[in-house]
Image 1 (cartoon, rainbow, N blue to C red):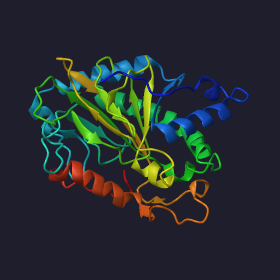
Image 2 (image 1 turned 120 degrees about the vertical axis):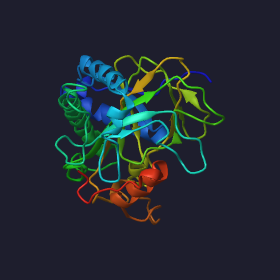
Image 3 (image 1 turned 90 degrees about the vertical axis):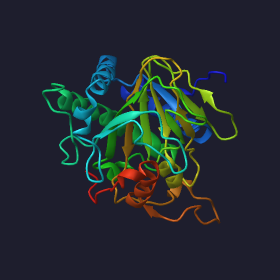
Length: 311
């Protein structure tokens, strides 16, 4: 498979409010979402030292003894640790990763490692969560205008957002046939940010194309749309299949950030994405119901629930 890049969008002018920059960014986001469903952002304003620090923290976290991580295991009512083998889709080998999940800082659903095992962990991941939440919020006007809606259209659905930070470990393990670090899938939600990784492993399959590894821009975030945005946009924007594999022979870590609407949000065709004379392609659905089905498929053994408040 040849290595390819996804569209690269420089946000520096938009974030600096340079004249004309917002219209350019809207057009670039629209094009990327309609054609690929993935793009990279540079000029995003995030100090890359913060990203590298979280990569280092992820490595230290996953080196903790297994019993220390299982003491805050993820369950139907709490966020936390999912051990290797915990992510399994029906009829498939388990995914070759272990992961820590956290929701909104301060949420009673969050469970963290004992402070004595990893001092400062909660404070550091919480600060990073807030930083990426802020960046995603800055992107919302671009998404709204790309869908031919007012710039503030999405704001009320993300107040607050249902966002999740995941610290993933892909150990160097031999895979069975058709076994992956993460199975081929499209994301459930609205927007995912994945910082460029020193160890390659992301592969995507845009509609009508073969799988290919993504060559990430240095110090960039790969951004992809999920099924919720695809449904909201009446299939105008793509939710592209992707998977992860660790073929490097060393430990690989990934720190995706999932930015999704409140669980009580009704996902129905945006006025800017309707087709004249045709009914919307999808019935309205409450995001809570879609998310429960998605998580139940990938983590069925946890019988994951989604609270009414999503926090």
